[in-house]
Length: 100
Length: 100
Image (cartoon, rainbow over all chains, first blue to last red; front, side, top):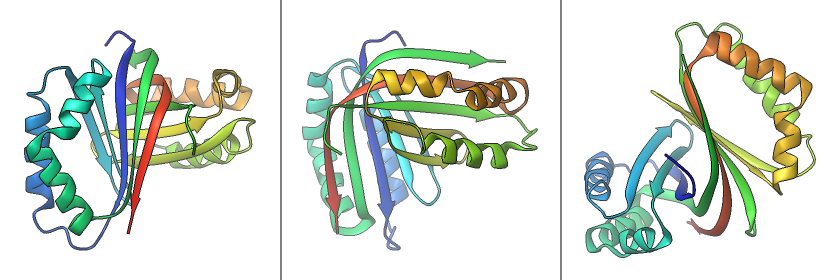
């Protein structure tokens, strides 16, 4: 993708109570992909979870943050699944890649 | 950490030849922590690897990129360990956290 665009860096530590988590994560990913301004998402997790989603602008991030289904998921996350998390909103200024 | 500061988002897909990779990753992490302007690092990996390091400014990122030991590690990465990777340099504008 050609900068500038935005990255939302979400890092988390989960609780032991992950009932319903995977289904919700999949649902949120499929919903996010339908939002205006969504550019992509990458996730990895072991001791901590890192999800980076990419967006056209701050407006599209704000809309997704306030999406009703997403608000419900955030509430469940706080009440059940997350010990802690940090969300960072960052403007991607440069990007370079290597591919075999 | 209080924005603004920088995040380097490094996402990668590794090859099957990971000989020496873990040792090098540990060495690079310990070296990075000694650099001026280094603020922190978080990593997770399963199908893909995501490492996000945090830095005070572009100058400190540039110096770390050009660090001799790090250049050697980057070369080995390209020659042996990575199928592909993308590095993104991003200015963190906002940050918010939740903790139980």
